[in-house]
Length: 204
Ligand code: GAR
Image 1 (cartoon, helix red, strand yellow):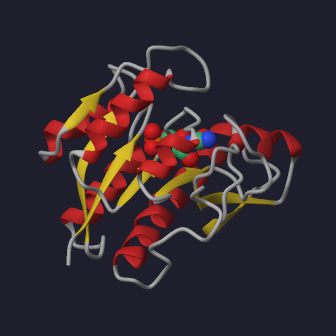
Image 2: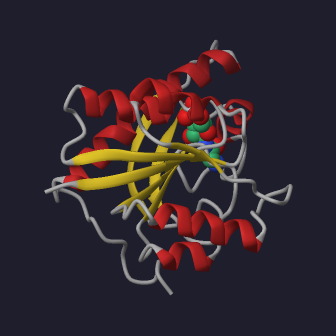
């Protein structure tokens, strides 16, 4: 049984690449990456399309800031729907999506965040943890709701922060944990070992 996923990202795409590599080495369960999307024309994530032979699509956000314009969000919905995904994966997609988007996919939208939520929500989760000086931080995969980084948690992976860790060192550690957690969560979801559907209340 196939489990098509699409990935949305705004940047480098190292997590998208971790998923593509996991698929190549048959570590992604039934899941298969069917398309990559970005709101930045020059984002590294789009370069992965050619490397892994997957459609890589830029859609103009038509707006600066935290949200896509409503017209752009509709464009995303229509283009993504054409791939009939079971799951939408936000891997470094730096935009907040509205109910309309989430409902279009039955609430089956997940996000990767670089902290142990509910701590350190927002754009710079790793820097916030570093500045606060916590002993343990990590990463989280959660269901997406329109409230930023606040949807039900699916799984987390902890990372120990040593007092001597610089921000680049901590960033490396958290990203390594992300590259393990995200493929693992998706593999388990695709095999029915984790909830494949979001809990009540995610879809409105
Ligand atoms: C990841 O660390 C991800 O957790 C973070 O962006 C990075 C994307 O890296 N996402 C957020 O901060 C969302 N609030 P990548 O482009 O190399 O996968």
